[in-house]
Image (tube, rainbow, N blue to C red; front, side, top):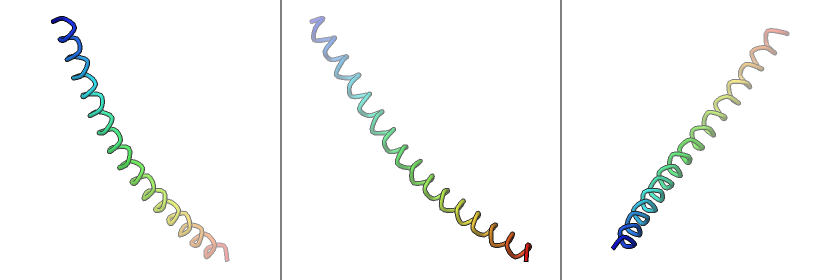
Length: 58
């Protein structure tokens, strides 16, 4: 009986961990996508800034 209870608790904990990992995976994917988008925006802003500086220095 005690073994069965421990096994059930272990299975429940494993299920919770698996669920948490899936959630973290989903969140990480979102962060990676946002990071890629932000990086592209930063690159475009730098290019625009460089063009403006070049125009001013002429």
